[in-house]
Length: 408
Image (cartoon, rainbow, N blue to C red; front, side, top):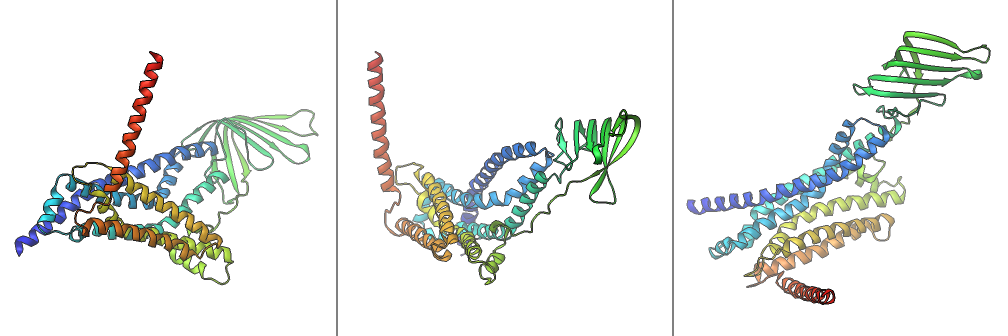
């Protein structure tokens, strides 16, 4: 009895290691690809707005929960599929089956991964992602409003309010040391003020709507219609108060469905004081998140069913089909969420009917593999793909022969 328990633990640990490597690799690669794609666009956005580079890293950090929520299901699927494909191609699966291990028993470790990752994904989409999405939108708002100092761009004329224009040649120490400064201000009754300075720095004041621009080594030209000639003043140090442009306060969290936690979505969706359209959108988004997480509990069955190729075959068709199925289901859910949001179909019907349909398909193909002697869910598809690829190769050969004949 003790030896049997030891063997069970060894097999479980072996499967756990086989699943962990492709799972982590897939999750890392998927996250890196999404981050790299977003990073390029964020660098372009921040450069256009004139913001500091470190804002890009903050924005990417706030996007990570969303990327993880997309990558975790695919990582789980491929981790289990590639692990079972490996033991199937090496005939280890046949040995385990011969000594009495059923597919249900072998699915114990995959379901440990599935339950843990489903809970993690529920925490991400239900509670973490709404706050990170709100923080991301807040950074975008601050960049556009100039709250991060993004309104001052190197080598360009920047308007500070309606009557003041500033241009700087260089910015050092994250904007604390400005070089090559030119400032032009229009006052009342035709008065003007033009200032040039070698260096300058912004200083805070007790008034949050006013800052001091301390200038070093420059000239000040004061114009007035009553002066015969503009007055010129050379200075070593001069403090110039600047009224900050009014910046609109960023909205409260919850301006969009993605910024609400799942309990908040339920509360808004059943609040009679909320308009009908908003209630539908909230409930549709709630059910969308729920079915996306629930689907993860069926991924081990799908992965195992597509991992085992027919005998004497090493085709990777199952890997291709698994990705197609997961992505297709995600897109179907997005379409169903849109239908539920506009009221075409009740939100719970729009989202849970596709879940039931996909669940039935997955359970059916798993049942063929596990309970039908010699059952191979993807065997027929492999034969179909083999016929199609053979015809394509034959057609390509005929085209090449014809082209060679024409050129010959």
